[in-house]
Image 1 (cartoon, rainbow, N blue to C red):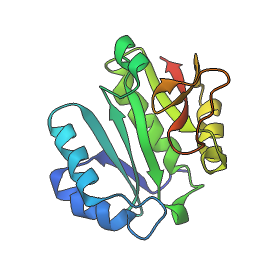
Image 2 (image 1 turned 180 degrees about the vertical axis):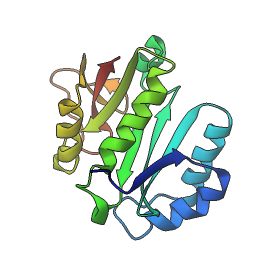
Image 3 (image 1 turned 30 degrees about the vertical axis):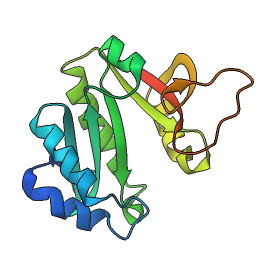
Length: 169
């Protein structure tokens, strides 16, 4: 059975569509961030893909070619970031289709792709999804604000406490 989902590249005309489509959900993004994403697409630094379910915005995801995580930069590994599916449309395979499309973009330029997730329960679905899709930890341990967490150090459990994973072609 084919899902009524279309995936396509973001265009400049989509800035307000994305802003409005994400508003009112727990994935709302500032308009300035969405505009910045578009500008990075124009410069070739990022690929932003939009998912539509029955012709309505269902989510988006990004592939960043110069991520903030030093190891990915040093190894030339593009990173999937900010994969969001609008909550009422989750559990329909949309996130998986977005990841498929982002991986295709990554593997056209690299033999590896990276991704990271937070370490608390809000990231539980992502944690399970990425492992099921063949992503494995990069072996560098957990990071806080992209810096390795040293044994014995206390860190805040928030969106900056991340485990990074890699998938090979």
